[in-house]
Length: 195
Image (cartoon, rainbow, N blue to C red; front, side, top):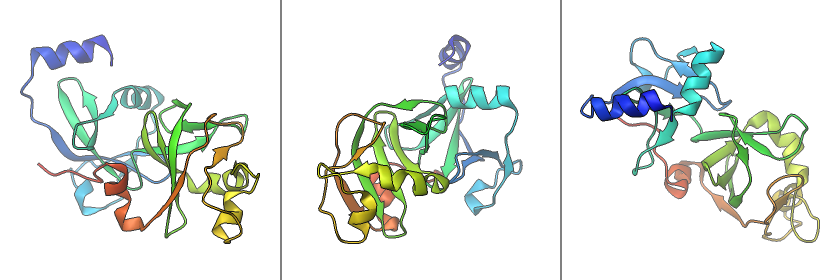
């Protein structure tokens, strides 16, 4: 975190947390809810200013409960998560994985496939969901030791893995199946918090 943010936290330790103002959609876009109503599920307004996004991404973190927030000076602004704490994409070169905040993923400890067809990865940065637009290119590259792809596993012609992403994290990781409703608990995050 920036030094001025750390200084503000130390100077004003008792600033109340903010809820309902920010959300992260399934495509990795941070959105502002000017009426503080993100808990009602609205889309909000996309934040597009590059400098603002850079600040928000640098100060994006989580607490011990698995609630994700942006540390805005001395105040925590909690984020409603529409999919997962991170949205994961392939790199500009088509290899590896990157978080929506611009962090390179070097390690995946496990993959999760939910019953809605979404793929999640437990990374060194925290849990993330593969962005839907990335699935078509990622699934054929996620392979087990025999070279079978996750597509083969989804069709029932491949075993349980472990799985490794070509051009991505080095170590293979196991694949688990989960119900979509169980994803937050399985990955240890809260989709939303209230005051």
